[in-house]
Length: 236
Ligand code: SF4
Image (cartoon, rainbow, N blue to C red; front, side, top):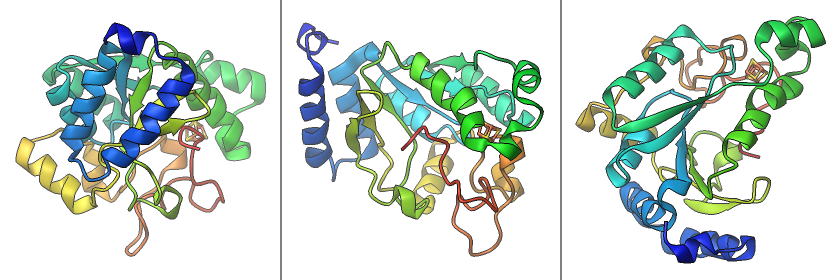
């Protein structure tokens, strides 16, 4: 990161994000990440749910050794932890695992068991939103794998935007991609994917809050199924 960016204030960063969102709307995912790498250097990271390693792979091409932040909620499928370990072992990235302040057992002792069934918003706040907020503190920009076609709530995702809640630049380099684009990139580059994607899951989150999708459902229909909740609070 250059001294110029080091000196940027919040207003400058916000303006930079909004301008980049317009300028890079038609750029490729790799070009968007190259812009992020040149602009923010080591103060840029990728977050990954370890559903697949597509954005981590793209980012490692733009910035070898890039930080890949993974939230270990304590409720993940073993396949997700295995994907995280494989990414760490074979890719040119630096995996950083964030954990909540309390273990699942400590949370159960304080709030009672299965908080995810009784108050999923609070559970997500304690196990996802807060740890990510703390983990992103030293970065100016973070990249996600959000795509516009995943659900109506993500239809307007900018490729680069301003994360008002965290006061950071938020980059969604594959926002314009379809599932076919993801599949083609995975096949072309041999990118690691979560084995659950081959087992009926279209979107992989915590085990208690994720089910397989049915034919015709959108990719995120298996998340918090039967509830009005559609997002964990990381992206809204
Ligand atoms: S997805 Fe479910 S288990 Fe995971 S943090 Fe949110 S409510 Fe808790």
